[in-house]
Structure formats: structure tokens, C-alpha cells
Length: 161
Image (cartoon, rainbow, N blue to C red):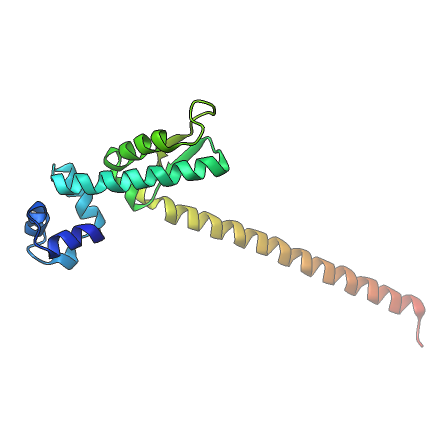
């Protein structure tokens, strides 16, 4: 998005399509708009997404070298670009992967929840944390109640002092 805005601000001939789309309001250029224009065939937007995809593939290859996962899932807003982004990412990943041919190649897939994947993941994590907090709090209360019963039983068994 930043590069698209820079090209539009420089009044580059390759950016005329996007400038026309935003009616000259460069600050109105957004990622989803770039994806939409790329789907409609805008050459600059396609090239921008391919560039991002290549960098994404390099990053994924570096992660694969360190972590060796079987799958990478692309979610969030960028996943809406689908093969405009993920295709170049897969190509760059295959080129950059250390030890390719000697290790299983991780699969790169789009999240089924697409742009909502991050929000659903955050909500699920919050639910998990809340559940653990409730359990820990319940155990704390149970321990306190056991101790209170124990202390009361000791007091009653010792009789008046």
C-alpha cells in the first residue's frame, strides 16, 4: 500500500489507474482496493502483490528453515488476494528454502476464515484464557474453603482455651 501511495504521489504513469480510481485522493488507497484492482487486471497492482508475495515467500522459507513445520496458513487481510499473493509466495518459498530436496516441503495454504482468521483466533485465545482463569480462581476458592473448614475443625476439637 505504501509503495502504491508513493507511486501515485509521484504521479507515475503506471499509477494512473489507481489515481483515477481514488479520484486523486492518494490517502484513500487501501490494501483491499489494490487487491480489487489487481483482480480487474491493473498491472501495477498485480506487480505490487507479486512483490509482496515474493517477500512473504522468503520470510516463510526462513521460518521453515528454523521451525520445519508441515504447513503455513496465510490469514488476515492479505489472504483475500488469494493466488495473486500466495502463488508468488509459493514460488519464492521453493526457490529460497534451505535444504530443498532433502526435507519435506511445507504446504502454504490460505486460511479458511480468510480476513476474519485473526479475529476468530484472538477470540478463541481470549476464551481459553478466561476458562483457565475461572478454573484457577475456582481452585483458589476451594483451597480457601478447605483451609477454613480445617481451621474450624481444629478450633472446635481443641475446645475452649
